[in-house]
Image (cartoon, rainbow, N blue to C red; front, side, top):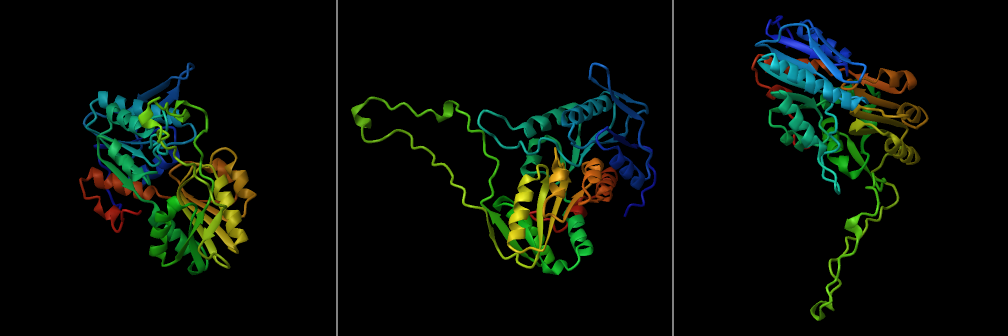
Length: 356
């Protein structure tokens, strides 16, 4: 599948976010990474210098979202624009983890940041985007160019089957009712049961007093004496944390699209342990593992956290021996090869349903 001759009109450029992944992809494609220097001047401005000619070539820029997220975005935009102004034929952004993808819903007086980012990327010159496991699939609609949202689930399913002993005695756990679809998708493919954790404290929107909470003015009219104006939306009462489904004497496998702030995973793992689960795994595509996540995982009942290499996390692995990595560079390089050779992408989406 990957026997591709070195093509003269393809160029792989990597930003500073994940050079290791860029090299893996270039090696799999049999292409030498393009000469591109991305650095910061003393005033913290981002500078991009492309050493090779890009005129008339297909450029693939490999840049993911890491903790230094705003610099990653600026590097990508400047690299894309540099290629555009240097007469590149096509500029494809390979963004395994799309930054700001959690901010894809309207909140109070905020904005949908994913939409803004999509507009900026298309304006900078990207003609196509390859990404993996978007936080919400609808984000594809924010872009004015084609988006291929690849899935890492085949790699994680393979990990369960090959690396979790006695996985037939496992149950797939949804950390909250929102991730039940993903859990069902895994459970049906592995022919396992599912459990759902209900009552977990979701991220509460800040309860700051703003104008929206002020009561509506009731006009002093005799015709309005009966009513009380606009009815207030009743506040949600969270039930105590509970597991729907049997996990006693089973292996619990929690699946999600990203592991960022691990406190909710740790709280869920503690409940599963209380309910009799004898081994607890966490599987996710993107391992952001922010702040003191490695320490929290190390001290928690979680036995293993399995993530892919969409985001570099070598430092976190040194701090916590429970973190495992699955390599997905073969999927990204195959997507690049197919797009470059104008082949169909449908093989990479075989058996992918709306729930995945």
